[in-house]
Amino acid sequence: MYYIGLDVHKKTISYCVKDAAGRVYQEGKVGSTRWELDQWIRTMPQPRTIAMEATIFTGWIYDHLLPHAEKVKVAHPLMLRAIAAAKKKNDRIDAGKIADCLRCDFLPECHMASTAIRDRRRTLRYRSLVIRQIVQMKNRVSGLLMESGVSYNKQRLHKVGYFAELMTSNEDVQESIRPLLKLSRDMIRRAQKLDYALLSSLQRDPLLKERLRRLRTVPGVGPIIALTWALEIGDFTRFSSIKRAISYCGLCGDEKSSAEKVMRMPISKQRNKHIQRVLIEAAKLAPRQSPELAIIHARELERGNPNRATLAVARKMVSYMLAVERRKQDFVPAEEFSRTAAA
Image (cartoon, rainbow, N blue to C red; front, side, top):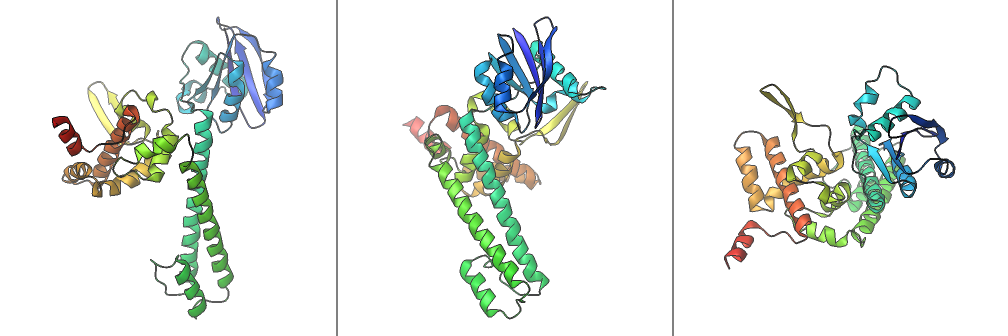
């Protein structure tokens, strides 16, 4: 078996090929294009295993090289301490160290979702970008009005009828800001149409439709949360326990222990920030829809920390969604489940 380490960059890829004994068979650079990779892979010895660090370019390279190797592995960048802490660091050395980690089975491998899931995840994350731009433009409209001393109804400002009435009947709206207000409104309208189109295409997708339907039976889970869970989690079977899923979602703190001293730190930054954000937001409203979640929230709230109460609800929602995924059945509330079992 030959082990190939790749140090991936925008225009070039440094590679190092080693055999099982650690001897360097070949090393060099190749261009970061599909054609150059095809030419290069034909010159590599077989059988071969390839490893690379996770970057923005990793997805298409992984898909392109997968048919040409026994295995293609992607390393977690934060776990490759041997590279980050090195005194001497360059592309050739980095590729060699990745090959060594792969050869010795020390590579901190991260999960690589299927191409179909990654394509749909890209659409969902693009939709998040559109939503952020909508919020920015709405804030800009409010800022323009406040700068000019215009009084307006905050709750109705972005309604189509109210905005048109404000532009035509309010004399405080200066001529200098009218073009900017109209331009901002047009951008908001176009972005909202784009948001609807992106969301509708994902909800109608045959690959996700049934999975989303089951997830939405969980209390507090709407279309956005179901989509985010399905696409960010991907293959739920990779989580052997609920604790691992909770950790991936960023709903628990770091632990730093030494000797007999155990220290609990704040919420870890090593998490999937996309799913963490939607779960936290959902957990603030979910207790209104589920008596079970309301009890959990109230119990934690008695201890005097509302943030911990929200996290407790979010963790319970993760356990519910993981159970629904594993059983491939709709969610059943505890009281209904008890009545069914008794009957």
